[in-house]
Length: 191
Image: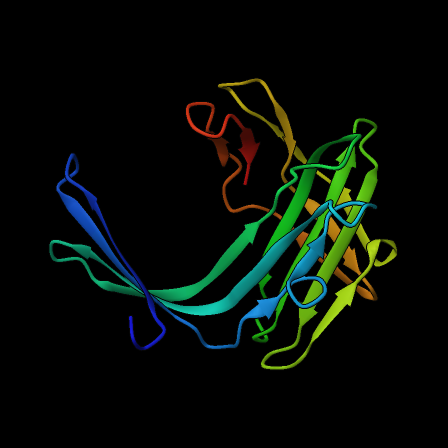
């Protein structure tokens, strides 16, 4: 839209409902990594172009006749030519709208032994500048796990995340957040 808002209409005809959404930026784009160039491994080509729109003001209405709901949203856009560095078997990622209006994105690329092959984070104060953290300053410590009844995969669902001098305790509101996209991209993952 001309106002800079993101809008979507999501019909679910089988349920007889439609969800109308409007997401309005409340902060400038957050360029991840080095001005939007986000390294994902030790080689320069192991990188992506990556920006985030944190702290989106979200309004939604379920039709017919539903109330207007409001909250905060997060939009990521990332693209690259290379998926994972050699030796990487997966990644852990988090994007958080902080209660004080700030935003945090952190990730680590994981090897078969579970150790980080590469990690980074960006922490932005509310309306302020972004601070980028290198691998040494980002530590993911898995906590409680959950086993999918559909695939049998065990996922860590609670985390302690350290970024610089700050620590975050993360726990899901719902354990069953497994996404099975074998019919499209081929990945099965927890988000």
